[in-house]
Image (cartoon, rainbow, N blue to C red; front, side, top):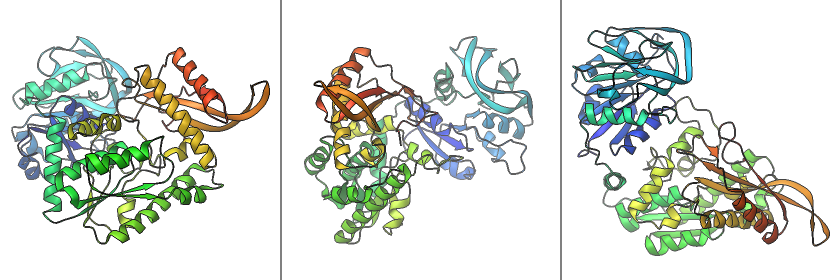
Length: 514
């Protein structure tokens, strides 16, 4: 992005670092997340319009706490410090940081001492998200206090001369009511950004980078799962290198209704890549027979996928690069994000390329959230019905079947899910509910059909609203819609006799059941 105005975000390990990048991009300004210890000359060589210092789990007084070169503050580039970034700025420039008398966590009312510059257009009092034990107790020379709370006397500070501003709260999270306004003020008032970056611009840059990486003769092998992420990667790489891309689609028999044929059509006609479909459904079902533990199911599917994929790759001969559709939530939930626990083991982060002997990996979506991937797909010309399709996990319907996975159970989930999706679309809620699907719970219960006793399965409806898929709330679907879905499932899907609604948020639950 050498010709695009950009903001660099120095990552100190904060849990919200990627959200900062997200909010900046939402303002149509390109952003890059870089390690906090990137050498200053390398940072400056990227010609950033501004630099944001993220939050982080450390105390600035820890012996091994992350530090940056203080010369950054003399480089003439506007700086925004958030939480740890604010405390580090204060310490490096001659201020003081002390442990707060009362730790602040959650929504806190912040009083703005002025309503210009960084706080321009904001209310005098605003609800903001705090998460800190340490805080600035004295500003560095040349700084003034511009916001406070009952427990935090320096909730924000600024140096107009140096164009350095800092906030103790987190403007990037949705819990901060006017956080986007603050970020916009930094971007446009301090950094002088024009806000002309679009997903089309991202696509152009990604295509250029892929061409430079692969070269004029290099070849790429892509594991095409049939989901949105890998499909967008396929379109992106196809536009970069054409038919030097080979897509291998391993059909494990656990996709949703009609999806396998749709994927084959798109990548045989719209994007005519070298496309190989390997129908391995019998193998997957045979290996899953009798297995009920969700992690074991994931490992079996992952193992079989690798073995089937490896067999197809061997037939193709040597390929230069491996590509996959890793996105940022995959990285977080696979434990590869800073301070992240391993939530699920199915995500395609790192394992498959090593198994196949690849050392060169292409992951152009690694820093994008799901909605950004969808926008990129539309910019690339993918069909809307594919791009706006519901998110779908790698193990497919296997983790929407509680207990043993069989072809018969997969068909129950497949048909009930199709009904749910049809009714959501017909009601016009498909643009407002971010993810929705059915789960075969494994619970059987007594019912009555045609004056006869039945003992069949319970189907759960799961529908959530979310900005980033890192947190989610259950969708408040209209009762009439739920009634239609329930009636259709019980009447149209064999062996489904009861329908229930999942009303659990993430956290504590994950969006998927397994």
